[in-house]
Length: 284
Image (cartoon, rainbow, N blue to C red; front, side, top):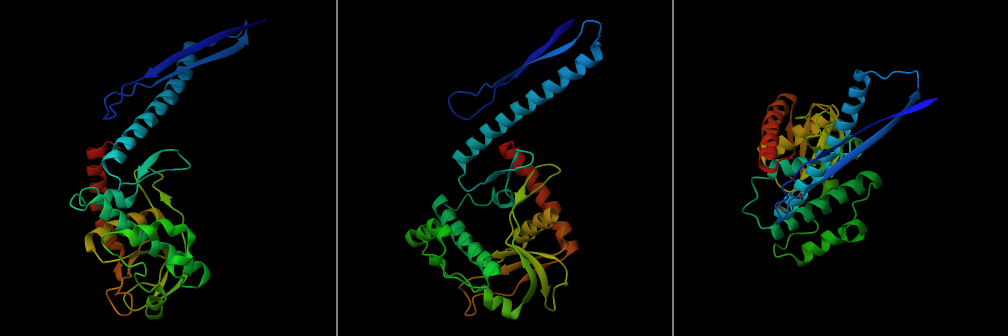
């Protein structure tokens, strides 16, 4: 003869959304356990199972809170980007968002959009060059048409053809170049990043070791250092290099900036403080 034991409960909370009405999600769970009439289920086992179900429900509540917070942030700051980790399903800010969240208040959303689009165009051209060996004109790349239109109609009149990557490689040789998918901080889920490529540099001022490369329009020592430090931590690399591609010089590029292991360690500490400040400001 069988008997059934039912375990049930619920978790609820109030989340401030920043709008006129708060969000009040509730997660209810119920589980039935079938067992023989002669079998016993002690209080300790029941409590452990109840705790497991409670923890699962609380995790769902935390995810709902994170989504509500991110929706509010997106209303306030269109330039900040959040990405979901496909493994953990948790959402974290991009490295660039962490670094720039308190430094772009004097740059209009429209200008930010144009700078971001120029960066997207250059990133896609570099990606296609590494894959095909051909430096394609921006107009031939379908995936960046929206960015092309933003630049063509933008008030800043930014160039579509910002820099010359093949010319850079002629002067600064890089072997084993690879495109890398976006990476996530698996330990804390505190940030994510997508750098331009990895490779092994072959010139005087750089070590011939696996290196993270990121392409920039202009060089900013501290910001670039924090960004490369965060990227190298994700990739497990000990050297990062900024590749400046722009239209300011006749050759379409400037001298690369190399960050060694010691420098990256210092800039990573600065980045972690920025991440703490970001969390204090936005709660995520």
